[in-house]
Length: 537
Image 1 (cartoon, rainbow, N blue to C red):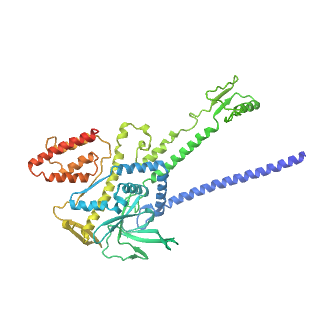
Image 2: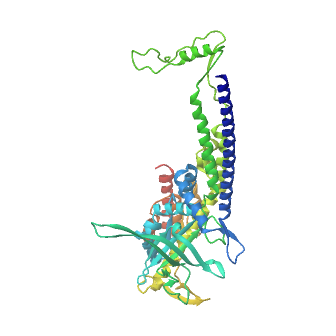
């Protein structure tokens, strides 16, 4: 019997050694496999750069940009840091709205009609649409607006194309910064079969859309190869997050992606450690034998009391533990036993740096003061103003396009103010409007102040500039612009309507005495506004 046992043990030892060797081989192969996967991922990242033919620059290819944008969209929806950074920016840029007004009343009427159009409000000109477009621009790095013009009336309608559908940008062979066409690829979904046998049909589609500033003298026809050209829809492309000579923009959250993920994983690991503390709540010392440990275990093995039949209830609140000399019962100490959640602050700071926002904007008010809560550091303030200027330029381009189409269309509403001009220049048509003398086509786009300033001091500063500390208007600021500055400082609503009412009243005051009275009324009005708005009335 002893020989059989020894033989069995020897066989088991050999098999165990073989299993260990196999396990070691598998572990080594697994490590090699992980290294290979890592190398492939690095190669995939390297493949995200492509050399453009004929140019000595590198940029992400379209597939890699799509991957970055998709990840940014997921992180915006799921990661609190990315979402917070994006939302803070859009709130600073658009949270207080914007005021748009043209100097000429006829031009202003055309601009306001464009803004108030139902389709345009849905796409861009309403408050919600502007907020959503800001998020799209941040996350995708690209924005594609489509301009549709009624050739008879000159009315312009806006639409947009998702970045995921834009596959290629065809540029001037001699100048990559001059786009000509945008290739769109999408799935068209239709319903067939009637009400009883309704079947969804998905049809792949492709089309080229011309750039809004591209007007070739020699039209290329309705197709490029086998792909249709949509001449009725012009693309206005906005890109951010890349370089001036890149074809596409890059998601503005790209730099924060890795650090946001690292901070998330750090907190998950920290939560796992904290969760593990629940397994051991008490430490008992002083047991001298296994039997004593067993006895202690039975004494500590209480259960939840559920009724009068409970024979081993847990201690009540305030109970005392009575132990023999040399025995000790203490709760497990967790303070200083491991890293704290605050130790991941450096990861959070990397996210904040990538988002271009101070740490206080991500919820840590402990590093801020009342001053930081009511103000903004200069770089952040300039970044927000920079974004507002970008959107102002976008709107100004669209407004100029609207005015051009109104002058171009046979039934346009601005023919009395100027004339439409179209001339060939370097193989392309250049279009512009020659305005008559005395016509001011400028459009003012103004945003309320980014910072929470003292309203009373602002209005007093405006009054000082308008009167040069005198009692009458000094003529340094036009009446309408002065009124706009005061109303903007007070964050008044419907500024355009209020300015129109002031203009009507001002027309009645044409004499010198009337001007003096107007100045007095303006001063009195500003004092009343200061009292009502700044005084808490």
